Image: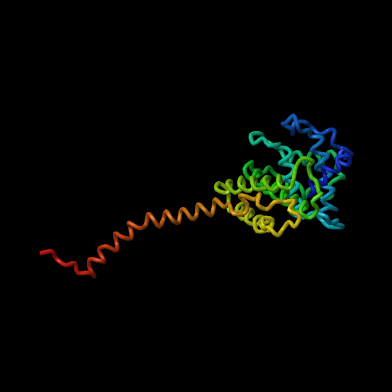
Length: 256
């Protein structure tokens, strides 16, 4: 994936100039620096022109998805897992653009996409991104059992992590909008094949390690519970109408 590609090009990222004079007022975490975020953002921006998955793109303009991803990435970097801080996404991008006016090919167009993402929505996006990222790791290891992302992690570790993230994401659907739930259902439909025993012939990835994905669906379960509760609660009400009708159509014999 593109972010992993960037991490593998740390030397090239460090070469991006015009980032050393950025104001530190945009950064609120000691583990992040404005200079490093700027360098990584510019490398990511440049890479999007020529890289997506395993394909090279030539003479292709930035898509809406590209711009939205850059906005998501910058939000995530500036916030750095802290929900309580205020971040200035558009201002940070504007500062990068002012420092290096010739770098961004269409700065105004990208600026229109730069905005602060609500913290809850950003968390939803991160979980969804991590789900896809883990699924791709599993697929790559199935294709090549010798493939290694991290030295001490096996394919089953990524399966269990995907399972855990899927439950966490689905649980958040109880308090999120329907679009997020639908996005998770798309992920489920796209990668459900990973849970089938015939997927991995080498048995490097144990499909049985999926204990939660893709069956877990608290939203559907809640809907079903509500339907059952509605039926139970409506039963006495129905009887209150039915019993008088029974008395009208059935002659009850008198007891002498």
